[in-house]
Length: 430
Image 1: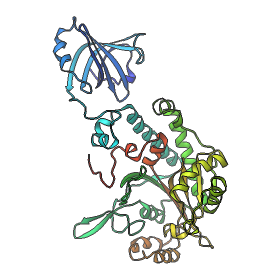
Image 2 (image 1 turned 90 degrees about the vertical axis):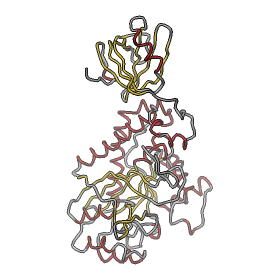
Image 3 (image 1 turned 90 degrees about the horizontal axis):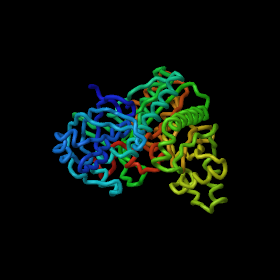
Image 4 (image 1 turned 180 degrees about the vertical axis):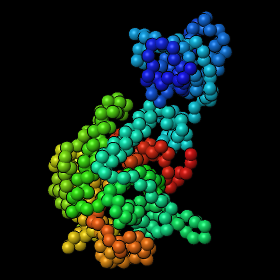
């Protein structure tokens, strides 16, 4: 008999397989709650009818893996969908030892046994939500003539700067793990592909132990040509995120509230997202909340200012998102286009007080780009990249979003909990 997923169970004869979530072994009856990826089902064993099951039931433990065949009936006394299986045959696929972790175990202990921790309903929902999120973003872009590419993660030069990269031995030379697909996204623009996106791993050699940083995470990047300004990039991103959040709310909104709480209700944002210049952000933070920083720090957004933008955006605009523009050129990558005043034509997008994106119009003119690379001391390091712009390249821009960081903010998690397997300065296993 073929297996039936629990969500598809109807009255009749079925075969189910899964983990034992709960088990009550009474004198004459046994009640086993079986859980698969789609749901839970109570299986009832009548020992008098099946004495051959008694020895097996005595060996059964929580989290063992089982297969049952039997008749499913409707029952008003069963909470799990009002369905109950009366078994005719049982097989123990795997007996579980006593678990080394609990739901309230320390997070680093849970990370040691992540494969067990992932069995929790919250983590199953987290990964299902990620699936819906990335599928929705793909769908949005494919409908707008984007094509998906897959760029190399072993590269010959650092993609952002000379620091914060992992250097690896590559035969008789050295290579780096890509900090982003930035160079190759722009190569695609020079190739005439016009609109591309990618989902893939990103590596950052940052010895950071915060709740939002990881040394490896999943990035969702896109780039597109023939833009007039970075406003086109911001418009693309706000429409993309609104579309994706709508899909997540439709599919998982109720369960997110049930498992994580009402404070994590998915709120579909209104368009357009509010926009502020960085200097105006600092003025408002000081005027409203008494927060100030020295002038020499006002070319970038400080960590405390970033957190306060959650309150600022809510108070000023009634919105969870905020675009911040007009950063200092010294704080932006060399490939960001600058206007006649030298101001980078890019932005950060903040959601719930955390930066989720840096986006920009890129510099596509070879001479200007070469000059800006020289200014940062990178001209030799990025020589191969500069070649992309010698033979014609359309005006273009793009951005990248961290899927794990989005998940973290959706559900109020730390970055350790928002990744399938976390990688940080002190974690390489499991």
